[in-house]
Image (spheres, rainbow, N blue to C red):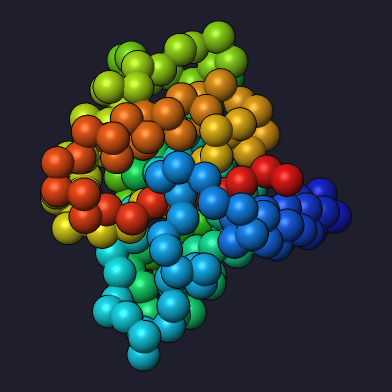
Length: 191
């Protein structure tokens, strides 16, 4: 069992490294700031309130752990918004607890983690999520936590999962409609 976990972590680290390289080398709409550096150290800029927007519990571990560790090492405050319980197999409550445990391990306080159980955002390959609803729910968290930076999936959803892709498009909608224009967004891009 331990070898599966280690293989998953190694795969996630490799995916992160390759994805970050691609992100930094090719600009895409709504994803890259003018600076080629991924959130510079605090000596260069102020501490950020970063919102990691996920589709399901376990996305933080499978795809975003290296990003979380990097941002934490630079002094940024991480908040997590998970759009669903990940209840496709009836394990939503278990997966939610696992997300909180993973966040505790990553030193993200429980009060900075929000897991939604919205009727219109249920886990599943055949579940289409409304981009407007995703944008609205994300904006609520942005205002609640005074978020200035978002990190989420690329347009392919990293793994191709439709819910991941919908989250990406919901964030794009939010950025397009954001009147203040003061939110920076980054995507974990599959290469």
